[in-house]
Length: 228
Image 1 (cartoon, rainbow, N blue to C red):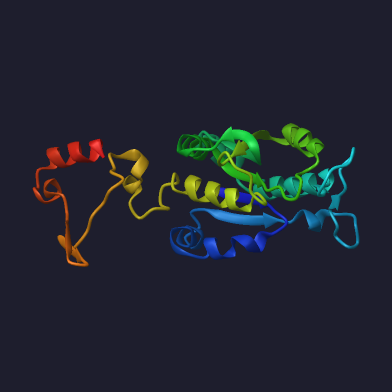
Image 2: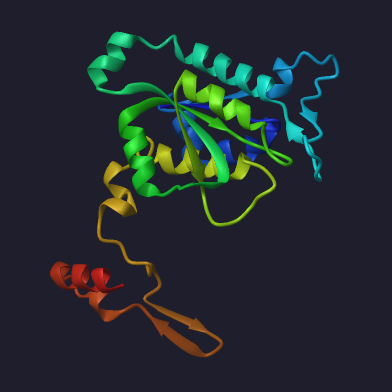
């Protein structure tokens, strides 16, 4: 799976993509993440891509054309993958995710279905007051485009939601996790987990691991996990 991120602030991703599981997945070429800054596609010599909104209002609005051109560049970059190979995989090539607080709620089910069906995910990160709505209409003619939200709240920009998408979708790609079956969403998993020592002593009080987890009775353990 390849992620193409449209963002004014690509460096915001550096720390997260450079650590742990995602870092290894990138190094092992199981996934890839490429960035496209709309400023690089602006006709303005100062690389300005924001303008005051029509009809007034606070803040600035990102121009449509630089965003559209950035997405076109991402589509072109994805074109190096063999169409025959994609056909054999039974997958469509490209999906555009337009991040917005008013979009469809993102969840693990959506991540799984998207990872199973698509090979290239283009994620559009907004900033300021948003992106000129005409960009969204144009992108819908380029590839399947969906409005997606990561939760019922408003953030400064789409970079954090994009990281959530990358993390959750990457987990659905075989090889990213050391054990593909370790995905919590694919097994009975409790919100409460324990490790050594068996008895934790803190300020004179003892905290014990539930006896059922020490019993060796796998049926009872699974029942306990299901209840928790």
